[in-house]
Image (cartoon, rainbow over all chains, first blue to last red; front, side):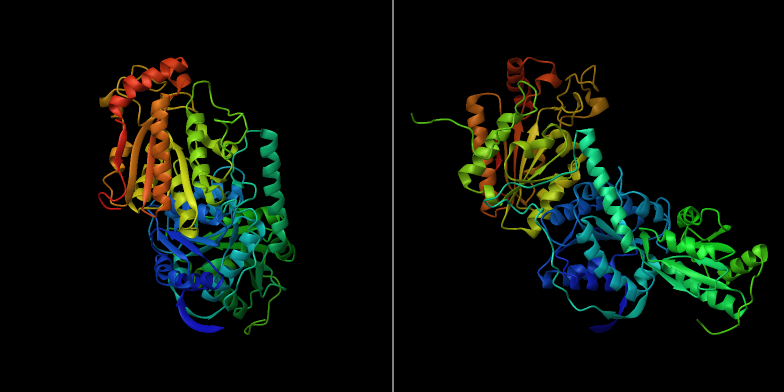
Length: 361
Length: 249
């Protein structure tokens, strides 16, 4: 265990090294360029391959090649680059090649800006490019958690032979926090499927094409079975949730802001609590449903025009009103804004039982 | 009786899905023969592309990874970088390599990736039904140039071998034709030299194989062979454009 003060981007890179990453391919884009820069310095020292590609399109296909050759491979980007990677991710998913992809989200759409945002939620959680595939999606909210989830991301990618996305934002990537780095691991991996040269054995093929509709359907159902299995990986954090009448659902940086707002609401006697999804796919639907079942209202807070709120509404199934508050374009929500939304929600659905002011549960 | 001709072990017994008169089968055989002769079957990894040859892995008995349209050189880069002692080749058509994959082929070549590219140039998109390719000849009728390719509207045939040869990372560039036994013999030598260039660690190697697409061209197979020789070769001259030890790598 090593303690360090690191940017989120660097902490993810260092954690990936300790997870045994052997190949990194990327393309410069703000606000994540510290990650490839860190890899350029350190990955060769660890016997790995760093290569700056000619585009994100090429980079994700290099990841596909390296991952197919049986090593832990990784890539990082921000929104516009994540869009370009969708084609490649679809092939990785279809051909069941594991990798870890980091998206440090920025304001959009289009070129947008380089300020923090959460507008890539749909793109990350709903489909891996074209077709019926999915990414598993992890959403850290601190530099420490970014570090820890990087380790988990590589394990999940191997376990499900599927790309795993770490969905952060420009704030998480850029801010420095103290972090306890994990001890290096030597991953035990099953790569009997990898195309490494057949030796004297039968040739192996990594492909995503099957012209026979019934056969492709069977393959697609196999992918969906994996995603059903992956439900067991669902993770979330509850904060002052047990007696919460106003449940805030927020992830990543937005959740940190919401957490402060919850404390302020509690200090003012309002029974607010926070449910923070850590896995965005699989989404903690049951946890959201349970929390909503005990609440009078749910408030979703995002740095977007409203994306995760759709999953929350699906989970809540109309049990209680689901409100939304978001800022987009790179504007970050503030605790007073969220507190105001909590107060409005309380005014609309009733303040409920007053909680004892102060302290944290 | 002594057997003087047979199927190379790397060429599988699977009947190909290629149209009558198509030269993909010949190109596959040449690759298979070279892999056998060099004794590299166990450490060779192919990258199949998108187009008629997408199922190359059904016919070549080596490890294969199938790539997205145009991305084979990037996939091959990923493989070769993490497994530098393996032999990695791509097998790409002209739409794949010279249109949608232009960035990937140029940058793989310019990095001097130690991979081998088998580039099938038949001047047309075969799988999608005979549309214009970047290599379609001027005046040539395709389903998307029904009046013939007009340079003012659709530009000029792209000469990939000439484009790549000057790059310092490129070690071997050759163009051959699959139109007659004599030409096929030369093509085999080029394919072998391309793989040998990789084995010697000299840099990027590519062989452009002028090929026929009788169905896409609307010609009988024998007419197609003649058309290749009389129409394509003047636009795409044959021979080595660069050999190892000259101009960089």
